Length: 84
Image (cartoon, rainbow, N blue to C red):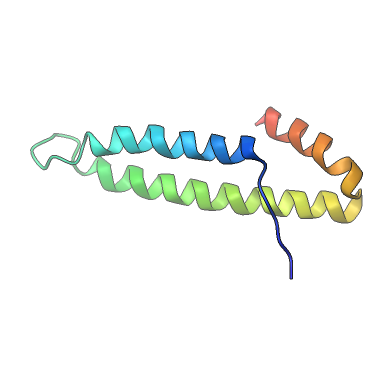
């Protein structure tokens, strides 16, 4: 059984992404608002992006752990994430 954890920095990045997009989205929930349809597409894109990014990050950590070992994991992973 594999237990894969995020560091607090990456949790905070995802949370800020969610919060920022949620503020944009909830301001458009009014049906009389001209961007009412945008609420659904934006929320869907946000959840899809979060799901893909979380699983991509986990796969990247697994690959680094498998090929290089735990001692190289943190430095190379944080360098890679900072490039994104």
